[in-house]
Image 1 (cartoon, rainbow over the protein chains, first blue to last red):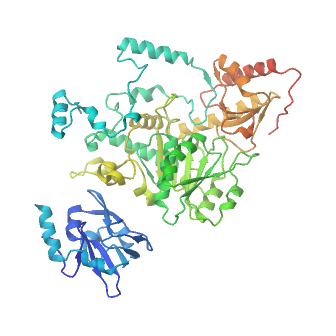
Image 2: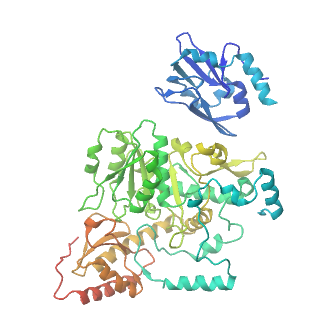
Image 3: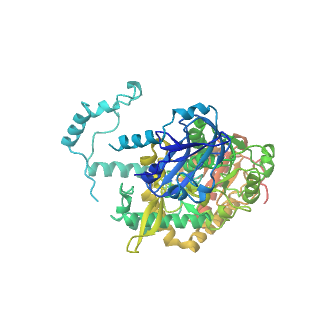
Length: 131
Length: 466
């Protein structure tokens, strides 16, 4: 069973979101997502300053199997991107919830976090997807 | 590898499974007014004997003229071995199979093609080919827009001295994507794109600069200065090159301080015979840093689990069958057969052989220009050095000159008056390595006689001395 930290929120498109103390939200893809995609070979992160809507594609992860979009779980402005991933995409496989983070958003409506799934909901969502 | 088409039963079963009555029902979405009915003038079928006779008579109607016409496609000598080998059964398929790795020979050939093109252009990576030179430029422009993340203008500086067909094809493909092609004028004396033409764009947000070397007039551009200017502006440089010329000119990878970013062009000069409408093939190379934005396929060499060399498609994850509408392009290896011929052509000639072809083209074109401008009614239009084409201006209307030369079974060159009316009666001429001293003398004799018949007491135009 994949790792689903209890302190994070999750989107149906398999991104996780962490609310930071400064009000910003860090985004990455879930452990389940990296496991399904396999070895990462390239990560394209968004430009800082980009304004994104909820569910808008704003990063691309490319594994040996497929290239997939990463969607913004909530709307906001990209305030930081993990450019380290461009040179070390395998970080997403090794540490999906830590060093493998992809970008940080300044949310335009922090209330949108409430619409995301919590860990328990995401776990049952994964189970329902697998059946 | 067998390719077995669907049987009638297969088709019926598949239609039944999706609830469609006939194959035509699958095209219902296309409005009836847009659908072609029959194809009048196309016979339902002909026997091999009938079709051979028809095609031979059509081919003979071309008359195999003596060719001094270039303008993007060139009459080079093609060693007999090139197509003898290309049409062997092992190679004679246009496509890589859908399970590409099943055909290691095809992949090895593409890998060798890429290696040769990368070394010819001085670039780090090559793809497995594109449709033709014009669409290669359009793809390069799209790639530059995707790659240059420091630029948001989607403005591409494009010299008027770049091939007119390439420019119009590119405009057709990129126009509806909000990409603007901004025209750069050429120097009326030199025929090149002067650095001063870029001055109005100094400090502006420019996505890329296109540089064609040699340009459509055959003239050599100041590629180093143009490249460095673009890079200072944060623009990418798209090189459009003639592959034969690359054997003796500075490769785009070495232009200016850091080299062009993308190099593309028409591959026809590398062993592909002249044909109206093609098929030809395009090529594209780039810097390693841009490879993930490159369209088309790339073949890589690897080792299998028993440490034997094997070939595989790399970067496939970005292709249409995986990325669907977000794919980098829908181009795969459509021009595979022509790439096969080009690879064999380059392998047979080698680097020295290709350089000798290029030198002979250059020398023949200089000899042709000297011979033709010996007539007082013919002058060279541009003063700058050329590769294997040159623009001549005639004191008489071109149509009156070209018609009788065609009647002598000679293609005198490309009439520039439609694309460049400001140049007057301008003719773009070319003499490849396949033209002999006798061919050039024959052209000059015919031209002199045609002009003599149409002028009375001498010619008002004085030739400009080089």
